[in-house]
Image (cartoon, rainbow, N blue to C red):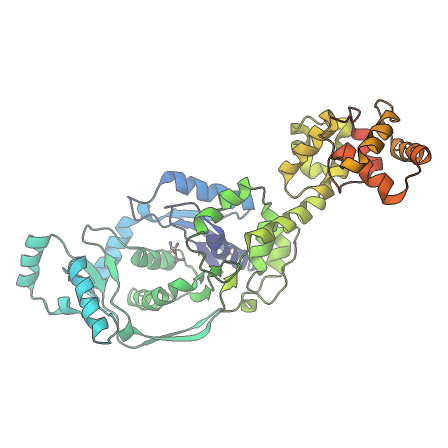
Length: 441
Ligand code: GLU
């Protein structure tokens, strides 16, 4: 049974980088008919906020990424304490009392000597008396997991065979001095208890994975398959980390990005398969294969989402947008005609509003100086609405006869006068929707 999880910390809104992780784990579970868990990594009570937990759920629901089970780490502290005790009993957990400044100094010294800044395990030498004294002076210490100094190896679902020398990694801190359990321990306990079989996450977690494999083994759990996807960069290859705040899923939603556009892009970006608009999650899941993804950083350009959004909207039948169309005030008997005219001329749904405004109240005409007289003459020949599908050709023919203009010189100034734009839908379709006769300002 395949079990995956998406494990965001509710300390902020989730962004396109998180989405990649969520989507991969979701698709693996769904493709295998398995279970997808939403896990909130909220062991940090100061930074975790209910508001963000709610937002994460809302954002995933908006995308249709449904989960089968939800868990919160803050509700499992007893389990983490039990695991900590197990590690103590097994001699794999030790208390340390260095302050952050002392640790910093150690690191600087090591770096000056050209050595990797790995924790020197000085606390392992402390006697019980020394520990008691330090505890009295400094309060409770923090707890580190004692790594076995051997190579940690696994076959990564994306990066291939990996081997990390545990001696090059500091013994990870799993409990802070104030008693707070850190993510590494909590995550391992959860992955064991929930039977997680596959973990896909960003390549910034590769070292974590090495240490987590040893912790899982120490606790007698089954090691899941790990895969680390590349991190996203901006279009020029620049780091995206600082801009991710503006690439939150809610911002994209507010900008009108459609879920299928976003999912279609994120499911293929960084893989050997071309990005193409898919019409459903099922279609995306069908074509998903983790082995198509590479290790190279993945370029993400937010602008790519808009052509995909436009393409998605073009493909929709009226039923799919009937609510949005009605909300603009479009009467039911005009809805079909309205949608057929605008759907290929919008990028995001909210662009529909400007078209409806144009049809109801007209628009500031776009008239070149040299066409002013021509347009005035043409408009004088146009009767009052209602117009029909034939109104356009009839009007254009009359104007042609009266002015001698033809082709583009005839049609373009008329289009610009009526719609205020140089391009757009067939004028024969536009005219029946016009409720007011266009007028020169
Ligand atoms: N809360 C962790 C993060 O957001 C989860 C990492 C993991 O998937 O284990 O980075």
